[in-house]
Amino acid sequence: MRTSNHLIGVLNFLTFLLSIPILGGGIWLSSRANNTDCLKFLQWPLIIIGVSIMVVSLAGFAGACYRNTFLMRLYLVVMFLVIAVLIGFIIFAYVVTDKGSGRRVLNRGYMDYYLQDYSGWLEERVASHSYWGKIASCVRDSKVCAKMGRVDSNGIPEPADVFYLRKLTSVQSGCCKPPTDCGYIYQNETVWNLGSGLMSANPDCSKWSNDQGFLCYRCDSCKAGVLASLKKSWRKVSVINIVVMIILVIVYIIAYAAYRNNKRMDNDEPYGEARMTKSHPSHFQL
Image (spheres, one colour):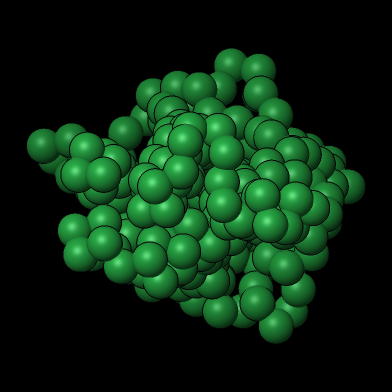
């Protein structure tokens, strides 16, 4: 009995530790929501799942230490639900970020982003008028475009051929400059003059402004850039969640087996045969 309780206590402590990377992933998404991704509801499911695992693990740990059957049952039931929710969240994250990516541009180090390359629930959410106004304000307030500026010792902006080879983030490429196919002429990172040739049919070409308060924040390319940034962030967090989820499932199975063993020893029953099974053969017992 003591060995089983010790095992359950150790397993609960392990699940408590596993909640830390999930909670950390939610906090990381929250920090990006304030300055880069600018979508402020995506982090909450992860934070809630992480906190839930922490609380449930502590309950299971207390149940193992004090041999409290109620706490142990609560731990097993709630942890099962939490694992199910975590699996659902992982599937949801991959489904809503499945489509869309940047397009490579000839002789450019960065990629261009187009909203028509994205679809689904997340694209509709980001592109909706009710959300995009807040997201665009967040991107503007983050100063992500102002931080692009590079000048030499004489205060002269870097030349166009150097800028064209830079590795811009999706938000910088989509929101801080006009799309390449518009044919604008580079002056500095956020100032582009209209070229002498024919303008592309891309509707974002007419939305570009050298006004530093507008730039391409109204462009579909900016929305696509935010979506690409969200996809990258979610995929990073999902990898951690998958690893944690696999370990949680293994730990849960071991904890359940130890709990069942405790019940058999409490009832002073031989291994493989439970008293409740004898009296109620068809009744499932947790």
